Image (cartoon, rainbow, N blue to C red; front, top):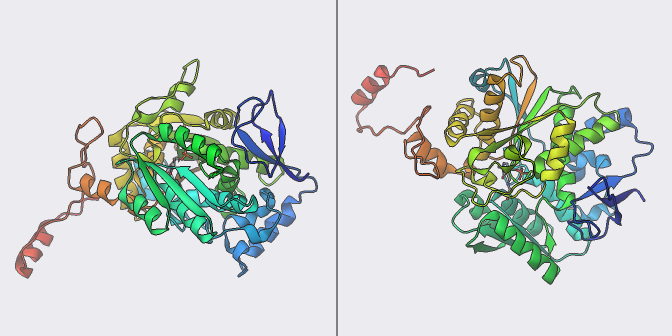
Length: 438
Ligand code: F0G
């Protein structure tokens, strides 16, 4: 057996065929993960092959996920693979953001450059592929927006029927619009993300629908490619820190697994430290990792960074393992800190959606606390595109943004539009009077 599913619980470790439809271990209820027999793995040879594939016109080689397929070899029939040429996201230097965070340097891995504008595409190409391999017809997810946009696209591209469940009135229009445009049957449920996930899991079981939330182990396999590609782009030089926002905690689980596997296979020579950043109003993992004896879900999560508005993250046991193994850190940041960090990322000419900006806000806090050294080599992951939530941007820059508790968010780096008369004299005078703000 070259690939199989395994219970994540080290006390159980039950094994299942890769063709079983499983999200939790039937024996103990723990999370499930994919495992492989990597015997004979040739790290140096494959590094060369992966580089060579960048010059290829073959769809799988052009994908920044499937280019690295030897690290998640669960696909038997390549004809099942659904690709929109995902991945291939850049590493961008951001000196202004580094200055803001109190660091010498920060580089962003911008997942917003993906086909549907978020890191979800790295996982969805894998999840949709497995759905086809299993002969599934319908796929479903509950989402704070990006998963649904991505699933709608990949399901439709792969000839599957996408069903989407979203919290009513709580996702950005940019994301909802994508789901509709890509042809998903979309249900808005009057409940929060965590409640809807329980609903959809019951429905999936009852109706034989394949669930494509990040509890799906193949989504996690695809998302490993984010750190694999990042390491390839850095010529396999391991950074000191990789920072990312945490919601349902699937992404940090994927990063940690991918990094540990690369380390074990001799592709990289050490592990970077992982930093997960949560919004203050939706930070159950922060609470747990900072002293709670047990994990407690948060019943009413609140944040304007709707992508990470999750109170009961399913992947917390995996995330805990990855933070502990990498000697990482978990931080939380306020609405104001997220909003200001986002404007700074915008000033770098890069831009991102609110949840992504938690990365920079958290790195700044960890640097101020001395956890991240000033001269550390830091990669911050920006998870979603700036156009996902334009309403938030306009409100921030015009001083109209309000936190969930109705308090005003200060437009510290606000840049509202200026109304001017149709008069070149007056506009010239105005421009003369403006001093550069930087
Ligand atoms: N950033 C963005 C832009 C997201 O959309 C999400 C999750 C996260 C960060 C957090 O990632 O859940 O793996 O810890 N969005 C999910 C969704 C929940 O439904 O689109 P995570």
